[in-house]
Image (cartoon, rainbow, N blue to C red; front, side, top):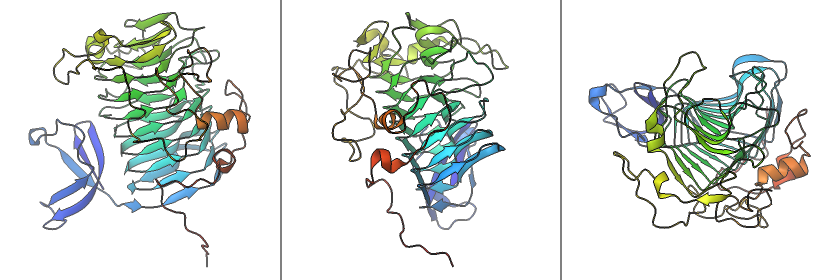
Length: 419
């Protein structure tokens, strides 16, 4: 495994071949290829190499980290490729950095699991991707976790069909932490799809990100008792070329304004765009290019009460990376799946969220959103509180999802013995 470095742009890749041999001066073949288009020899890129573990998994395990204190994670993947975590219950009520840390790793899967709690500090994460590439975080439940998904120097990550609820932040009780953050320089080409939670923040605390996509999510932009940063989509300075497509956004009882371009940590807006950073140690000015490079198409919001297909919200006149105004309002069901996955319940609408969805069972959004399987598990099987408060819950993946097979993962070994 190597991580190529171009200033703060870092990518985890796997060496698949060396020519003539794996020594100094060799030509390396890597997978995946580099996501960024601005790697050049004049910028003095470099690489570091570490060992690799492959095809190792953790399944059907309950872990309790209560009372512990660690600057590390409960489960840490380092130099890991094609590994997985599935059907796990992870409870952390001490000051842990994260439940799962994907570090210098790629092509791993975190699925069908339940994560509860953390210290409530700014470093209490669910799944943290840092120097991570092409991982899949799918169909998980995050309850009482400060930052359920943190995308650091990550490329090609897919965060899909997860539920996050009560994103607890103890340091400022009125501050609403969104479900997902882009939180470091060099985060590129990541996809958030089909999730249900409070919202997304592309922050500027450690640097900007670019070319990420938010697709067919239900983000309500609000949690009980929160009065600041109650916005569904927050796209701060130097986070350019964000794509926001086919989402269902806002809460009709909270949001009264469509967009905010002046007030960081605002309230009552569907979008906060290009507002800089007043409050995280270094003042960062507003950035008008965030708005001019932002693409919005087919998003339903509760302020307008309709899906917006507005030509002016498509950055067709910019250079580089101008996007032509779509010729159709039709949207694909998924950006990473070619068809409804085999694990999706037969009686559940597909796709579950979007402007083309009708008859959905989530209230006050025009029928454009169904609950997702992780949400059904939390509400109907686990009996979770509607506001996400309370103690850790009992969780068994089989009780929610059955003993379904999954072609994404290798078959688990059977009849193992320890001698």
